[in-house]
Each structure stands twice: as C-alpha cells, then as structure tokens.
Length: 91
Image 1 (tube, rainbow, N blue to C red):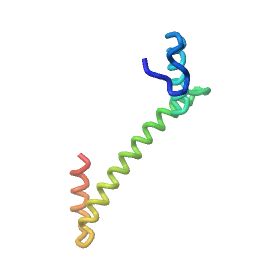
Image 2: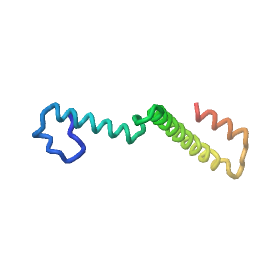
Image 3: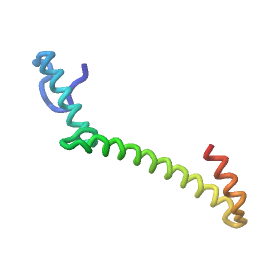
Image 4: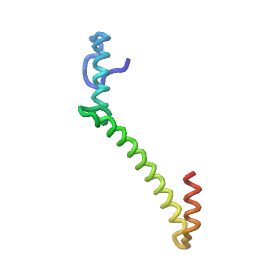
C-alpha cells in the first residue's frame, strides 16, 4: 500500500481508512486529468485529449526530423531527396 500524497498521519489509520484515502486521491487525479467528471462527455473528452496530446508529440518529433534533414540540404536543396529521406525516417 502506498502512502497518501498529503500530510495525513498514515500510521494511525485503519486499513479501510487508508484504502479510502488512496481511492479518493486516485479519483481526484482522474478528475484533474479529465478522465472522470459530472457530465457524460467528460471521460470521452479526457481520453480524446490524451490521444490528441500524443499525436501532437508525434508531429513535433516528425517536424524536428524534417528540420534536421532540411538543414543538411540548405545550400543544395532537393525536394525529391528531402521527401525520400523523410519517408525513410518515418518508417
């Protein structure tokens, strides 16, 4: 059993009280992350936000790769070579 995140004296609590505190802390975290809420749309929206954040991160990584490739071709830029290398790096 893990310790709660707040300053409660965990030693003097019963196991039931400890479990309740940990469960409530988990629920609070889910509310903050948008995984649970008061309306029927909160959880799906929270899950969609997670997916979008993941896609944004992937796009950022691809953009960084593209910038790296482009800097190599800066003086002698070839669109075909750039696209070919970009395709190879994304596989």
